[in-house]
Length: 335
Ligand SMILES: [Mn+2]
Image (cartoon, rainbow, N blue to C red; front, side, top):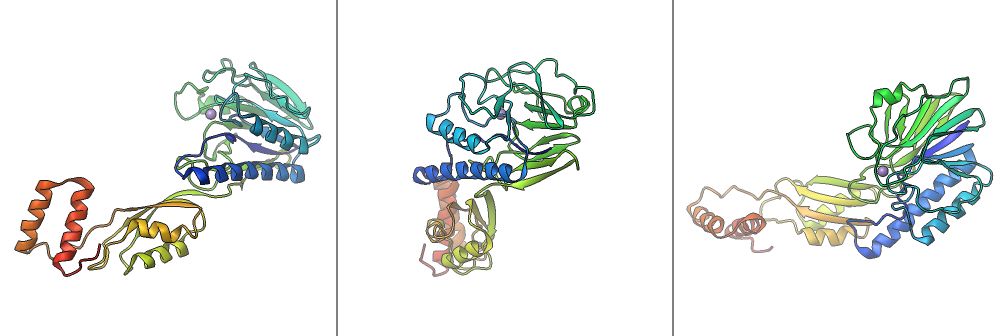
């Protein structure tokens, strides 16, 4: 059997860290990425496995449920197996089409093709499945579909990864951790497309083939969230820095931090750079964390000035005053 394994889609999730008018566009992009996973399944797989947190809440907005119903219908007779998580636990009936199977609160095993899929769903926002059951005996390829945490002792079905791994399943399809991770027969696909700076990097799903026992990560994120430091030392102006940023990074959602020591007499203008680069990046912010030039800091004038500034200000105000003052003493009065 060839399968697609996805999880933690949080399709109705609020989008943080970007302006509200862009957040709506970003929400739609994440739905479109989910549609591409459905396209991929139709083209290349015999089943779709979802390890929980498909939705961000147990009562997602009707429009999102309708969207998912339509997507599942497109799969026609390709089955979908869902083990609900701590966000979308068993609460309401989603009225999904007949090819969709949601596992109940207690473990159940379902046969499909050459596989036996065992799974269970969260029935409340926290909890654990007591008595994880071993893989069924026999020659069938066995899959365990579950939402849970193998990294910390949390309220979200904490499991010991070595114990879990030893239960005899050929493939353990987990959800909960929003980053791809594999350990022996255990795999987390991560979320399918980022929704905040706690989900940085390329996101995707797993495409598995039970006969060759190959399990590949397939990217599905439409835009990547990224935090980047950028050394401004080689550049002479804010426009140059903006050009360099746009040349160095693909479109995405960024938090840039400027570092290094700007050239003499020049102070980067973070908000101007933000303005320049908005023509390329879906969303970006720029923070100036550069050092100022200290080549004149031994002079008496500088000492009087810096003593006064540090005695009368603090934090960012203090460091900006020192930088602008230092530049002014060298004849540069631009800010
Ligand atoms: Mn979760």
